[in-house]
Each structure stands twice: as C-alpha cells, then as structure tokens.
Amino acid sequence: MICDSPLAALFTPPHPRAGRYEVCTTGEAIEIAAGQGDIDALPPLDAFGAAGSYDRAALSRLYGGGRVKVARRWEQQGDEFVSLTYLSPYPDAQLTRLNAGTMVIRFTVPRGL
Image (cartoon, rainbow, N blue to C red; front, top):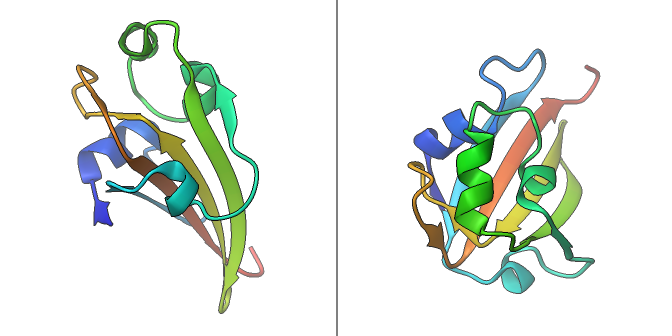
C-alpha cells in the first residue's frame, strides 16, 4: 500500500479535532483489500463525503454518472480505534482519471478521546 499526501489533502479534513487521517492506495480490487463484508455502490459525492476540499463538480463529472464501490470497517489496534473506508475505482489527485485498485481512507483515534 502506498500512502498519498495529495489525495489526503483532497479527501480528508485539513485539521481534524481528534485523531489523524491517512490516505493510501493499492492495486488490489476492493474485494481483496477490504476483506469480508458488505460492499456498497454509491454515488461519488456520497462515497467521498463532504469533509475534504475536493471539487465536487469535477469529481461528479469524472465518474460520469457511475458509482463507487465502498466498504467501511472499524478495527481496534492496541490503544487506537481505526476507521477504514475503501473506495474503488479511485480518482487521481488532479481529478482527471479514475484508477483501478482501491483507495483506503484511514482515520485513527486514540482510545479515550
């Protein structure tokens, strides 16, 4: 998995009040990257949410009325809770091309916050 700061800047809040965000990508299909569980097909703006600074119109045009496969998971890793959102296909940082594989948005929060 390769972590990507430009994608994180687009699709996560600039200054989260608690925890930290990381955005990584993999060439694996979402079914492999996310493991077992439900995978939904959502409109792009629902899939990527409203937290980031990305251009919503450009993202919608890029998907051209198509949907994004999305899986969501929670894990506990030691003293941290980790929220994982898997998205496929995913856009490049310029919002000009869709990439095969899976983008993973990871939000990590220390226990007790």
